[in-house]
Figure 1 (cartoon, rainbow, N blue to C red):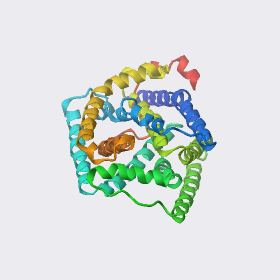
Figure 2: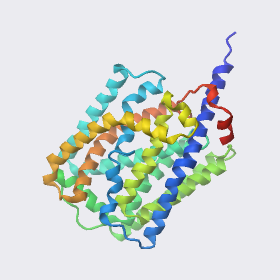
Figure 3: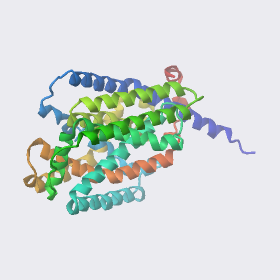
Figure 4: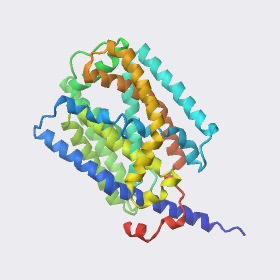
Length: 371
C-alpha cells in the first residue's frame, strides 16, 4: 500500500514555513513602511509642505529599486511554479506575451491616448488590488472565498486610484495631460464637480463597509480570523488617510515601490529555492540583493526602452519632471498588462499555498519560536 501521509506532511510543513516568512516580513518590512506612511500622512495633514522636486523621488528611485524591477523576473515564474529550472521553452512564451501585449498597448496610446490612460488606470486598479488580496490571504494561509476575492481587490485597488482623484482632482488632470499630450491627446480642462467627488467618496465608503462585513463573515470562526480582519481594516484606513492627505505623485510613487512591489518581491522570493534558508532566517538583505541581481538585466532593457521613449517623445511633452513622469507611465502601462497576466497565472497555480516546497528541516527550532 502506498503511504500518502508523508507528502501531505511535507506540504503542511511548507505551508507553515511560508506563513512564518510572511509574518516575519510583516513585522520587519511591512510595519516599518506602515509607520512611514502614517508619519508622512500626519505631517501632510498638519500642513507640512513637500517641495515638488521631492515628490518625484520615489518614482525616480523606483526605476532601479523595487518599482520597475519587481516584474523583471516574470520570465522565470512558469518554471519556478513547476519546481523546475528555467529553459527556453518556459521563458519564450513569457517574452512573446510581453512583446505582443506591450506592442498592443503602445498602439492604443497612438490611436487613442485618453482611452489608453483610462485603461491603464483600470488595469492598475485591478492589479494592485490583486496583489493586496494575495498578501492579505497570507495572514492566515487561507484562500479568498468568492465574495472577498471580488470585493477585496476592488476596494484595495480603488484606494490608490480613486482616493487621489477625490482629494486632488487637479493633480489627476495634470498627470492625464502629461501622459496623453505626447501622443497628441488634449489636456483636460477644469476639474471634477463637487457633486461627483461627493458621490465617489460615498461610493468608496459603501464599498469599504461592504468588504469589511464580507471579510468578517468569511473569516468567522477561523484561526486568527479576527486578528487578520483587524489588520485588513487597519490597512484600509491607513491607505485611505494616506492617499487623501499626501500629494498624489509622492503617495503613488511610495505605494508602488514600498507597498505593492515589496510584497510581490517577497512572493517571488518564496519561489526561489536558493532563498529558502535566508527567508526562514529573516536575512532580508541577502533576499533583496539576490532579487536585485537577478532583475538587473531585464530592468536594464526596460530602462533602455524608456530612454528611447524619452528621446522620441520629450519634444512633444510639456517638459520638466511631470512630462518625464508621463512618459514613464506610458512604459509602465505597456509592462503592466503582461505582468498582470503572469500574476493571475500565479494566483491560479498557487491557490492557498505560496508555491515553496522546502525540506522539513527548514522548520527548525528558531523558526518555530517565531510562530
